[in-house]
Length: 498
Ligand code: HEM
Image 1 (cartoon, rainbow, N blue to C red):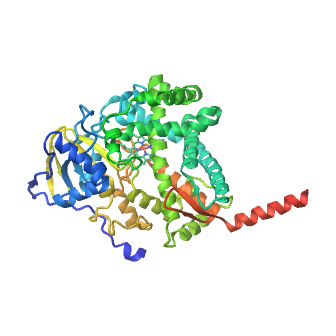
Image 2: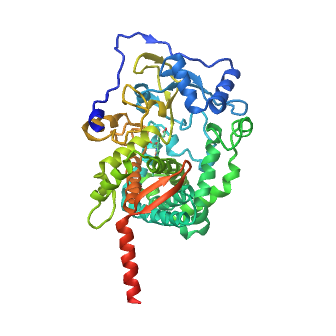
Image 3: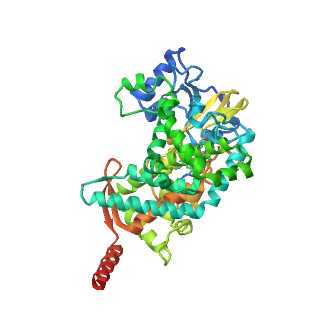
């Protein structure tokens, strides 16, 4: 399969510069009614994916005007008008700091109340031209560098605890849900790596910290995301019509804030001393990186990775298992160095990120009038207009990715595969670029991919096979034969010694 596959297209087409400028198709409709109709399509009649896809198809353009929620009646001051960009070429404009401003547009024109972040405008809301951005980005990059070894060991030990607990549940039932145990594992290892403290030192945070973060994230994002839990039109009335007040999670935030202040003194001190942040600014930024960026991102991505592999029946699992066991060093330890050698595993992780970008929407505002180029046309964008990139469509751009809708784990293997990485955008930038203070690319780009590889490698070290159902549950965890033999031998030795 790989040989036929390596002939894929790898370059983004651009229209000739002589092509005349096309007017951006689509529109915003009548005041109030236009945004309301688009909001109902987005959440109710079409859903997010069909919303973007159907407009791209009907307008015959990968750049078009539309409204997106939240809007009306209680989102005053939120302008729903956007220019959607849904192919690789036009999407790239979002990564060019000379063209676009990223101030306060993390989730669009709507920004959750600053009270959710302790009245601090945290780094992710700052544009690269704001002085605070450099300090916070550099602090975060430094934090990740310093915590690398703790990161690996605490991730693996928490993963071990999580897998042991789901194994024991699965031995008694047909299936064992892993979402909450995995979130607990993610939370514990991130606390250790980022705050420098084991959450177990505070029983309340140790047991319930992950659920506190879930509530805090959900309340900020509810107005912008579909919610299958509540039937329509109730979701429209109760979830998408007004911003949620912070007081509902104020107690949770206070507990997490105090945990960082008390147990993360070293890292807070580092932010104050070396990066000039105020104490509260440091705590709120650390909490945001931990809770929103890291915990939020991993909570979406890792379950998707597990279920994609766990449900695969094309033979991928045995190939991954063989590669993992071949590349593990003789001491049977795993680390970032070992997983770097696992090329199929890395390519699989990239392919899951391509088809399921964990943060599907990216926004940015035009700094000045500029010319936006899609694969087929050139458009004029006016200063101040808000661009919205819908990544799941851009990552299926047929001009760049052959058989773009298919899950092809080998896609990023070999020289041609590596070439394609410049069109992989999950981190808010090409996979071939490096996060820095000059850009808005995810500070943990390398850590995310390496951690994902580490998780799958550990699972194939431990299991010969695993399977998942249609939800986030394991239906099979088949222990590695040599591990079973070793455990049985250890049990015999123990018995003989008694
Ligand atoms: C699967 C996990 C993750 C995903 C999918 C993810 C994705 C992203 C994305 C898309 C952005 C850009 C948002 C925007 O401006 O539109 C971003 C920014 C950022 N991420 Fe991540 N991220 C993940 C994990 C992490 C982790 C583990 C950390 C740190 C420990 C982190 C730290 C940051 C920071 C500091 C920024 C802001 C960059 C800036 O302002 O220049 N992320 N991330």
